[in-house]
Picture 1 (cartoon, rainbow, N blue to C red):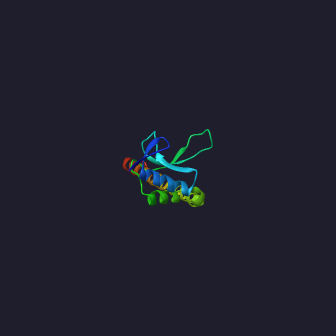
Picture 2: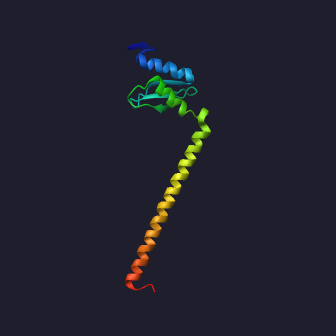
Picture 3: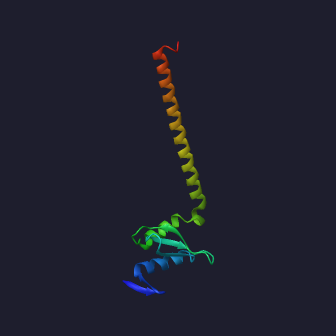
Length: 124
């Protein structure tokens, strides 16, 4: 069902989702991102700044439970240190993987050089 609210037509599920998101945090709202056409949770910024999209849901309206769960899990005020720790661990894992790959490639190159030197009789 569509409703006319604050000068624009809104689906009733979008309206209900917006109310639920506002109950979670009154600086947040749920609406369509006019730039992308995606459904997003927006954060109101101090005037005169425009509101900012903080979570996207693509072109499908999520259920209230889905949206609130995604919002809760990404809430940096609630989970800030946990999210920060996950980012650090991810960066460490990435660095370790890159170091491992570089080490493997260095070893492979050394083996090829040694093999070529032996083949040409340059190493005794």
